[in-house]
Image (cartoon, rainbow, N blue to C red; front, side, top):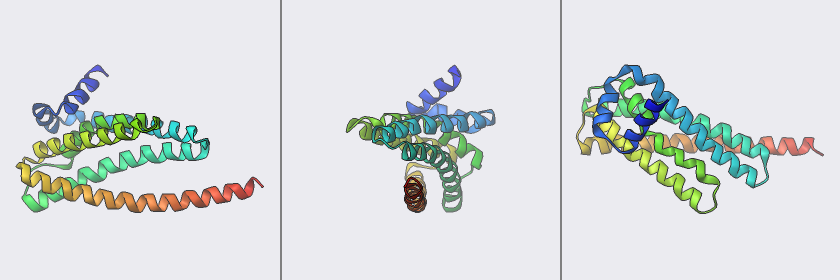
Length: 190
């Protein structure tokens, strides 16, 4: 566990040498996924606490589950889309495993999402963690795909826009489903 934490810290420090080592080390694939799962779960606990503070256990629990699932799904989508874009547009030489490893470790700063329950400050910390993870993901992507900065920027922006649209659609579906679930449960409580 100490080595994993050290690797997450190196990624958070935007250590280019670290990302070059991780992209080549296939033994770190499971650990990179574990980082994503743990970061997503810790951030989700912040959402859960926030929901409890609003007095709604049901919505807090739903936020917890959705936050973990979305964090993990976004990891895979971003890795595969980024790999596809870099390979298709710029003939980058990598495999999806390299992208999964570098983006897994790059997600570490998202752990700041845990503090989302703190009024005013929590949202800013969560945003800072997301931006930090995006910057780390940019560096990891550049190293994994062996692209220059401009091509990496194009690749990451296109990938981010695709993920944003996917999340928007998923959030809309989940939001409508949650409203329906809430309405149904309120009828049962009468």
